Image (cartoon, rainbow, N blue to C red):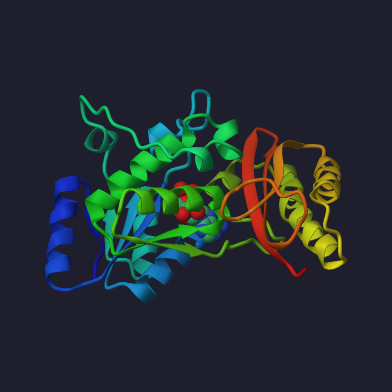
Length: 285
Ligand code: AMP
């Protein structure tokens, strides 16, 4: 079956209505394109769990701040459509900016406390842009299920909150982070890295692995663990730390002592490229 490319919101809604009236389960995978194996793992999961798999490709200007990389964000639309086809997607929903944000557009969706810290603190307005676009994509594709990557941990928590708070009838499914051989989380932004920076970037995952080792050895003090992580990261000349945080995975509140499930997140600049990653560690008391 060829992939159907839909550019209009109205057409997407009609396709969704038609699928729903036939009793089909719709699965949506929202992306900004330049697809890699991380994205494709979400599409494969959607294929397993839904009858109509919709992949949205939209580089959302509202989630980029001034001076961020909106203009140079990598794009490869035709290749993306081919990849979606290869892994069994049915529809690529690719609206233009004008289609998503027509003249007079004046609404935003803002999640509160969960969206304020961590990436929300470093990138003011970012999660407002994400929450707004995801709400619009859910209204366009009317999915039963929507698939997101653990790689963007705070984003998954913000989206699950907004779906619950706004009574959106879509199940939010979080899928594991897909990594390169050296542990670097796959990301469209990895394409910005020079060869040397690409090597240095492996330190994000090495530092998360170090945290896992330390907790395995019995360390329970988050300050000690994040201190060791920061020293390891800063051993790479191209690295600059935005944040390293050890938080409760539900509330995103910092932990004073590690117990049960801990979410360890970081955002690190490698040269001019800001990368994020995280792991959830279960600490047995
Ligand atoms: P993006 O195109 O970066 O907005 O990402 C679209 C979706 O793919 C988001 O739900 C991301 O969390 C997810 N994603 C991105 N990179 C990965 C990865 N390495 N592993 C799993 N999911 C990912």
